[in-house]
Length: 173
Length: 290
Image (cartoon, each protein chain N blue to C red):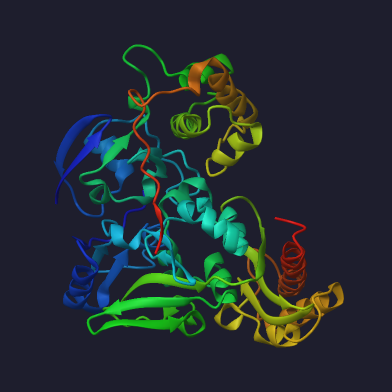
């Protein structure tokens, strides 16, 4: 099946089998290996990417379901040569550890800060609660995200952030 | 690497088109919404549908609205949207409580309300919460629409009253003066419930006029304890009554032993969580706890 997916602002067209998962499409078809692939059962969350502006676990989305949609991966996080404050925070506070969960953690962190410029520790822990760090480096990950919030990371504007999916309207009939 | 078996993939462009595709592909076709129950089962080859009908494009099924005296939740509403909805939080705290403990934020971003109900997983949270609320499910098939009471919808584990070419389109719950709560014990974030219980109370002049008790993961028939509901109806909303309702629910359910615990532990939890959910619901009715 022929699909066209906008990944980090660039259109990619490929012929894929319907059973191909989005994580494998990104890694194997597009060579974007920044998105990691871990448990395969929707538990570990290392494969988190944005689909139409919302973080999802890409091991549980079919690539064909992304046809005509927008995906953002860790490769699309920096602004040219300038790292995103989230990336800077992970360096500054040693949130990386082995690095395996880092791309997914950073994508969720970016989304959190786009929606909550000043998240509490509880907000951060809730946001990353579906993602596992095998190094159990959560303390530093939480600090890294706070660092980003305190260093301009929470004040992102629409020109650089992928717009979040619009909320569903509640209609009173 | 876990990969599903091969299948045909179709994108539905309307509810009618989805029903047409279901009719064309027959019993080996499955509807995929968020896919967070179905795709893992397909990867493990517990499910091998020959065709997937993707209904993610059906925006008409993705609304939460107040329609007359009902809250109407479209089948394609994502868990995160139900959790964030102010109207749901105001009138149905049981749904907000349940959504807070369903899987994790990323799964809730993609998984859908309708998909959860149609999966009919015996450990699923919304099935118990909507059953306690006595929701009505609007389904559409080749012959038009019909409404099924949720307590007639669940026929057994992974089995619903939907016929082959029918699609769940909307979940409706009457908005009325009631209080509700949901309590769950899980091993860790994102896990299925060890046990969970939901309580819905209508109280008039200090008397319980209607009660809904939902239970999940303990083999409760159709996710409810009717005996506990019968016991509560007509009585006082006090601690003694709630403790007895918990004991009744614990006796009525039929848990099985598995990696989440032995039968006696689960039965204990069913009773305790029922009592706690009732207490929180009653406190909310008194305006003491949000």
